[in-house]
Image 1 (cartoon, rainbow, N blue to C red):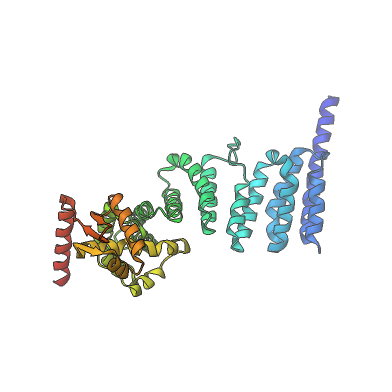
Image 2 (cartoon, helix red, strand yellow):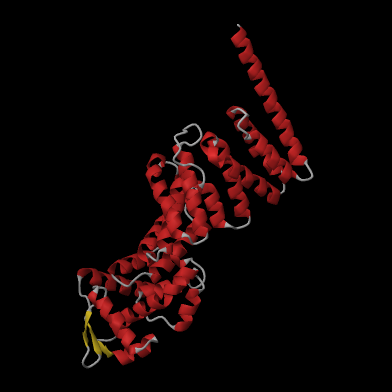
Length: 385
């Protein structure tokens, strides 16, 4: 009986200590110097002579009370708590997660995307604490972190978390919100890595995915701003993609999609010219460049040169490199190198006479090519009707 009484007294003492800490936290939040007072209180709460469950409950209360402070002071106190709790973080996973989510939100408000991502990535997503960190929680956090890194163009860091998310995604096939977020992150990573053909296909998949959702919500068709944005991204990426048969197929798919006709600005006109293999003029390229992200602009000149070279191959049987260079706006040696690479990679038919300085184009007469030309002729006739 004596042992039970002592246990009961100890429990009562711990409960009283917790209530005292909660009262102290409320007072610290309202103090004239809340950062200093809260920091001192955190040191007390995390001291070795305080039981773990009291410390845990006190930190939980701290976490839910910090929003009462101004953002700057809230951030200072949050960072201080995380620093102090770090050596024992495994014992306070739930509290650390809550604090890191709050810190992430504060960095987001300041548009400090990478710092927000790093704050969130400090959550132990490998934890076996299924009560707090179930697979859906881990998946959501991985995709959130990836999205934040992508806002700062940190594609390699984002890719790490997208790859982790991929292992968890199969359990949530019916969650279209998470599916869409994953597809969006993956497409943006391909785009950032200048894998424009793959990115164009992913963006187009997203636009169709969103179209289905929009139709389900409205009970009919019609495109939303979101699927139009994905469609524009798809058009931009396929125009920047390396010239070749796969690019031509995706161009044909986009050109025949009625939604592309309704896209504003220079999007559809340049899509039409690229699909019809017409030479792009500097003014058209300049207008198109307004749609591009910084990393895409670095590839624009190369993509336009390749496209115009392919277009020239449809207009001429042969041409000197000097004349070709003038047409492309580059020197003859660079024109020869680009043409040589496109021919050697099987992306353009032809042969080079280096002695005379000429390129001789050979046109693909395959079944696919003949069908494509027929489709172009039919489209031209329909446009005039």
